[in-house]
Amino acid sequence: MNVKEESRPGGASPEAAACLYTYACHEDELELCGLELRELFGCPAEGGWLRSPRVLDPGRSPFLKQRLDVRFEADSLPALLERLPELELGGGTFKVVYAEAGLGADYGGQRALERQAGARIRGRADMRTPQHVLGLACADGRWLLGPLHRAEAHWLRHAQKPQNYSTALSTRVARAVVNIAVPEGAGRRLIDPCCGMGTVLVEALSMGIDSEGCDINPLAVRGARANLRHFGFAESAVRLADMTGVAGRYDAAVLDLPYNLCSKLSAEEQAGLLSGARRLAERAVIVATEEIGAEIAAAGFRIAGHAVLRKGSFSRQVYLGL
Image (cartoon, rainbow, N blue to C red):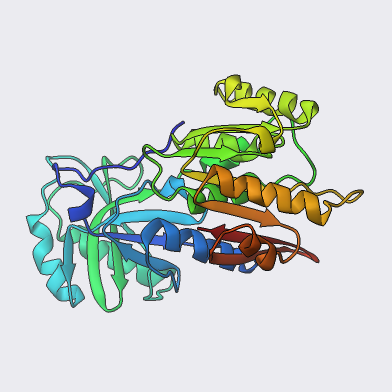
């Protein structure tokens, strides 16, 4: 299933819309989450929520939980409730869901708030199969209500692929990395020049991003093609090639530097891969198992973002180079 940006109901452009997003992540992924959301929305994310004019399917990110399209906004709950009879649902059934965004409330308090809002809306409430799900939230002292869209974890389904590496990026991390590389997906071209089993490619293609990959290892290429085929994507997106010989120009590259426990890239090999990424794209996300900021700069990139992803004693460095 492809994930695409949406327009707001009623014909308004995405730029004219006001949206509240909620998100969550494990503490080990906090830096990666912050970098991804900054690139997607152009603003820092703190406290589990953010507001943005950008209308994005919350399933685009592995960290987003839901999106609330703000239809009503007021500086107090009574003022918001006063306006809710104006809401037109076209005779459809509805359900109000409290979306926590700064104002903590226990279970009973959340249900009470939902009942207060529901009592002011014209229409028939349906807690099981409503035609309209409405979100109620309080963010920075402002009370908000509007259509609520929950995220679908597309990346989770992609974890069940037929071929895999034990050291490959998880589909969750791969999706975040693609979003950092290509925050504006429409019309952009992405290359993964050391694609391995194609984890990054599957995530990018599932978001409708024009993507291709290559690898020097024929077994990896075979596995990547099997994975692409499994999810309904063209096997031709992957080819057997050394990235140093790949021609063309792309909007972005994702370079997950080869890693395993039995061998390590030499300094010369690493420099060649980084220079290759610089030649192929002006923007790149580089993933490594050690700090290589100086090496990335030497290849001609300016480091515009850096996140450390931890898993026990193992860590990955994620760099955004421009």
